[in-house]
Image (tube, rainbow, N blue to C red; front, side, top):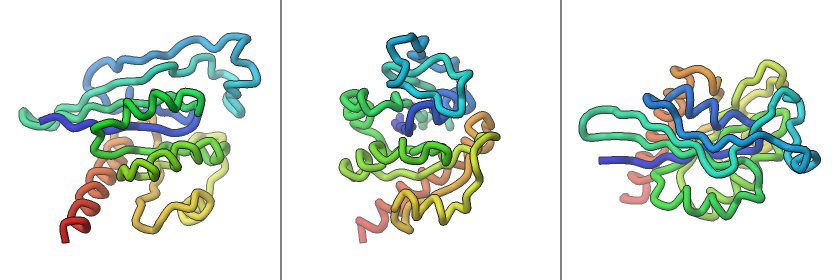
Length: 182
């Protein structure tokens, strides 16, 4: 059996890095160099060393056992690529919305998208060294997500941290299915 999970969030938040940290295969990445045309459109903000952007999707895989494989798809972060989000979300068990507190407003379109599609998700605050630290309750309030949605810290570079985010997502999916069944 295979299960599809989507990782989404704003531009430059660490989606490609997260998939690379957890995937057992070399991730498929559609990273393209940012050009002068993207100046003013794809703003790297506090990360001036960012020189690439995902233009279609990222893809990774985790085999849990012979009968269960997780396929992880990463969306492009820019809202102009929203037309791809529908296809990537189609058939997904749930999603991870990755957040950078330095650019929290960048994740609003993704949150709206997941909520409109009634897709279970967790919010993972990627802890960049340069980002301000906020209490997770403050992040929840700023994002206006319900208490039932897990909001947790994450280091997208760290396999164990990413694993905990995926476990939280699977628990969220199970809890939501059990609540609907009763």
